[in-house]
Length: 283
Ligand code: PAF
Image 1 (cartoon, rainbow, N blue to C red):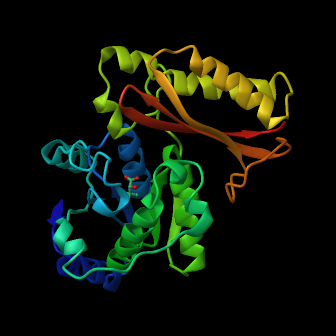
Image 2 (cartoon, protein in one colour):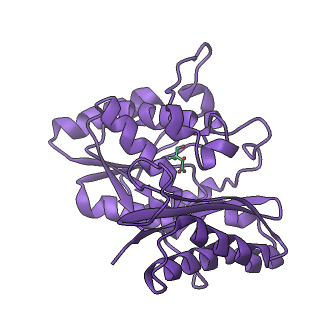
């Protein structure tokens, strides 16, 4: 497994692979890898000749009062996991390599980046889109892999890929969950024992939403939201940021769940903000 730290070397490796006719899959990450990330790497390995994993905690996607400094970092453990899966290249540039002195160009995602998580994290998705676009330009992957846990992020990436004509197929892989249903996330490491138990409320609320739509045939999104909010309120350590039921293609809110909808939520458990979602389809 080759470790690459500069853009110049990453470009050379990528050019070499392309010259050899090798198809590349890219898995962008911020490290602190868990089984959710590893499922993306496995999928990339299955579908491509070469798998490139990037590890970069992107300062541009963190707000001034957010957890950039404390975001979990464990490079040794990450490299061991990736070498176990036989990733071909790990691209792990320094911040000044990605954002050199004088850098000032950002992708502006507009309205789709300002709803759901974007409402509480202004500028976050512009930062995500910018770094992912940079990675696409540096690696030029045929396919790129993202987890459905960050559902809004996947919609945003698919949109800028379309809008700006990037030539990569965006592949969204299913959420990987702990046995009790909590979606895997690097931020779960922040939770103490009590908070960890309380965090299962996100998945329970989503299961309730799904049950209301599927088994109890409720299609009124406001009724579904109301019952989910009531359930979350019963968990003393949970503070709701938002629940929204949206069109999975453009994130517009839906009033009635007629076809497919995404139920997305963000909940603070103690000081840790967690997100989760589920796609429901009316049967
Ligand atoms: O999902 C993440 O870990 C990040 O947002 C990403 C896509 C690697 C961009 O920094």
